[in-house]
Length: 211
Image 1: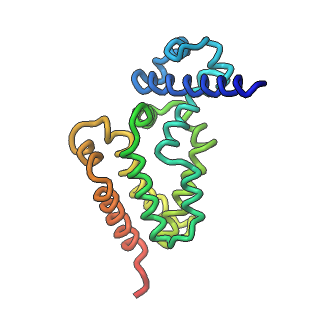
Image 2: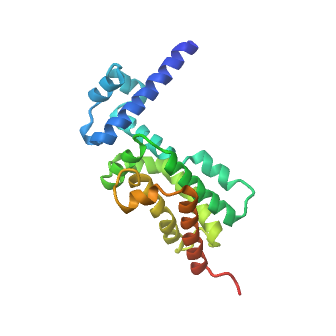
Image 3: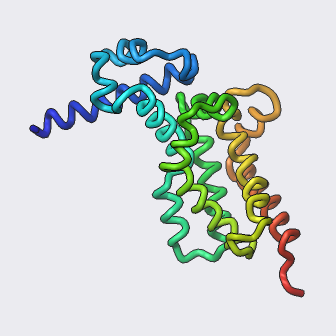
């Protein structure tokens, strides 16, 4: 296969992915047909099966792409393996999330919004294939910051307190009017510092340093 054909194939796959994302963001996965996606992308209907192996695999790729724009596995692995202190690593994690949250535009947040409030059968597969690795990375960052072992029963609660506000702002901040939208539009340094202050104070309350 020539380099031109490989390049054309990659371009078609990317176009299908983005067109599917845009339509699913507007209509939802259940109400978006393969025919609509192919027509919107300007390609043959068979291209979906050729590039993705079917409708469900295409949607799984859409979920993966949407999630990657907010939390990239490579970024998390780099963060875990750097030489920062646990405290600084956690702060870098929050900075990264807030920075990506405010930089993202397009269909990504709306796809995640729909998936969270109306989960598809593909969500479990996404978590198994890709999401769980990211969850484990975040758990490691939080465990190190709070000073707990990864099997401590308090760890899931700490993760909830850290991740829930970020997730809310990711999927709803740019779409929901009112206080959430106002918060999402705040200066990122102010917002990031607020999230870090509350989380670190909570960690200290959960696991007070030795006096």
